Length: 222
Length: 106
Image (cartoon, rainbow over all chains, first blue to last red; front, side, top):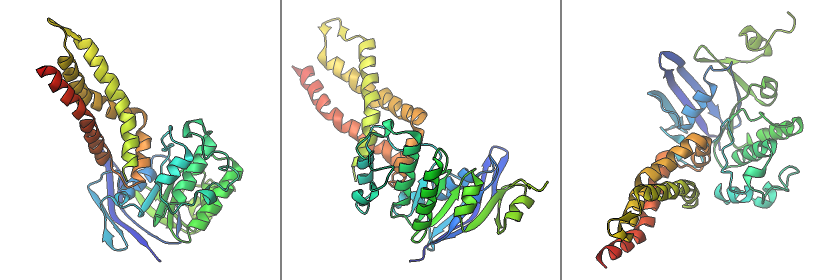
């Protein structure tokens, strides 16, 4: 089924500083949108507004044509991987998987070189890389229509970055995915659409040269 | 699905109980007539349901704020979590209220 997330007229101020100015964004099943932009341009702010956990006066978010102020409250709509670690430290991975729904097959989920030995270990004892990988896998495997990934590659070993990119591609068959990361080479590699947040607005980019032209990627020829 | 609410409440209640016990001890467990169980429970309950609960929520916000995304991903808002957790606190208080009333009238 094709799902459509459409956001329009999104504005956000922090005091006198206007971070987002009349943003329009559309994400469909199959999209892997790479959201790029320099530090402090409002990428995470935009994702939180779309998710529904950050308030703004001006927003218009609809999923399959139905308006929603807080999409996250309708489970199965959007899942969000935020920048920090979010899993409760006193639970085990298996306990957490149970909470995220019966559709997750535990055996299949933990049939993974990195996760096979950590199912019964409490979150607080996992390494940073193991924890991040677990979080990404949980979020990508929810039955949500859309997934937002805020800095998914941060703290992952190169081999796991490749696995995560494959997971993203696999899950995009049934989901719309928006991801942002400062490691732009990975974002450019996995995404099939690119947008850059600059001066509070979104610009759709198609070629690497356009990223250079907008001053996001250094021009190595110079 | 009540389990996520219980997980949140279990984290809040530890500090609620700690602050309530501390408040009870600081207010002085003894009065002019010596040991007063009814007064003791009343002081504990006031601390448990006010400052204790608030301290638990504030502590969570200050030190575990990112964990709210665990609950958001389960479709639960911060307001719902806090309200349900307070309801659990009220439920837990009922037996203590009964004991307090019994102690007061005996």
